[in-house]
Length: 474
Image (cartoon, rainbow, N blue to C red; front, top):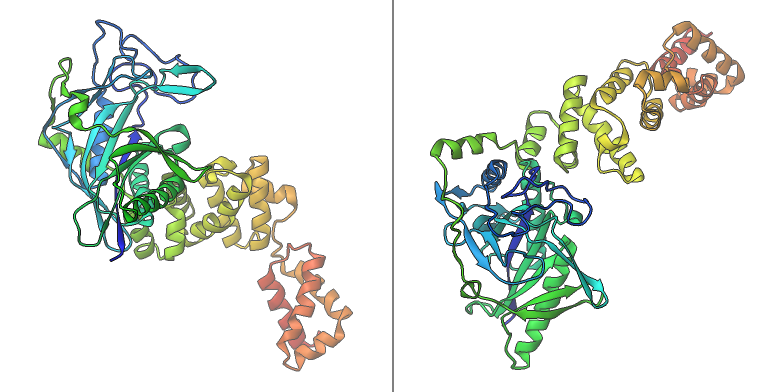
């Protein structure tokens, strides 16, 4: 019998609030060490927590984004453990009465990865150990609001875990819950891995702690799976423990024995009341949840006539989707907007290392103006691409860029006719072939005209003029 991998995930997501969960300190990333602290988040005697309403609103929106059920009454608890970056000696979290349960994420295969629960909690600080015999502690992150989403052990491969994370991140991003930036620690993942023979009960699980990239999640599952299988095939036991993943060495290593709930000595948080929500507040949070990516993709295809590929590119993130929708509305041409964004702007963003069109300095109104110039015949498509790059580099309008580059398309029939007559005089053989019905000869005449006009002549008018003059025998 083959071995089956069983995976469950615990994902910590930082909520996009201005301040921390229980105090007024900023929750911004990148401040000087210990700058964003106060008596509450540093655990000073007598300091009392006060719940952040904005965090509750975002947590409810997260529940709506994954279809979870929200409890009208939930409670906070103290999770007791001692570590240098936890100044109170306990973490305020939710235990037996979390604010929501259920919900899940649908994978492309049709499998649903079910959520057991999502609970609210505060983050710990950050300990920096790589300084020889010193450990430095930065408490800026202490008290930052988190939601922890816990799945059931529904995944059976590292690929399924990877896809689940991608789709969960997408849901939280489009719901406006978090920036989900793993580099900043806004999204962190713990993985529970076990193996078993198919049809047997669940095996002993091992927790892989604080994985900071989706690739590391996938790689660590494969490596841990192989380690557990090797143990079992040698007749040895898998020990329940917490391990760390060393990506450079391609191995997992023991951190500590895995604690059970009783080890944390949970008890109700005495300084916070019950979190009471009305049915109306819960319904309002669902209604306030923005349109999610799968719904947008379907709408772009069904209502706007875009390809599935373009719809996927345009929903790579909420910013690019908003940029597209604003451009489509301003230009009145969704297909042209999709084409320019999915092709030209995306390529430019990749070249520049930018995260999206907005970072290039091109606005939706500016791109809509360019679309109008190309669609109206004032610019050729080729010239439009040059204009777009000039718009980005110089931060100017489409018209100003076209004027600066001298690329405004020539639509004057008399001027085009002059270029055409000159080309025909220099290439009588091509003219004779064209009159004989050999349409391939068109290229030999269009090229010189476009060269003489420096690419500014309207190609359609050039073609039309060549055919007219050759038919007239000019």
